[in-house]
Amino acid sequence: MTEQEATSDTPTVTTPVEKIRSALWRYRILAWTTGVWLIALCWEMWLKYIEHVPHPPSWIGIVHGWIYFVYLIFTTDLAIKVRWPWPRTAGTLLAGTIPLLGFIVEHYRTQQVKQQFGL
Image (cartoon, rainbow, N blue to C red):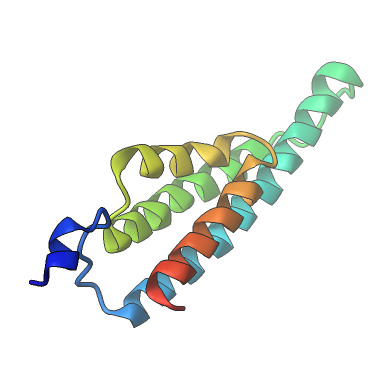
């Protein structure tokens, strides 16, 4: 180990770059899908509580919940492969619960991983 590697703040990652690339791709797809369904869920809540529509589509929340669950799995997979610290992982996982924040966090996390691993 060189002196630079010993003093580096970034953890050593032994995961092959192709596995990181595929994990990043899965994370990005699910981040966007979760974000879109979260916006749809907000629309459903708007119809139900603001517009007082008698029978808004109640299945949107169920779909978003299952997609968010898959998002949690894929985000954790990426976090393990690139060795994110736990606060970064937790923040990225929670980004799927706040409308529009998931899109912003996905953009910055993708840039960060691409720069770090030369993708």
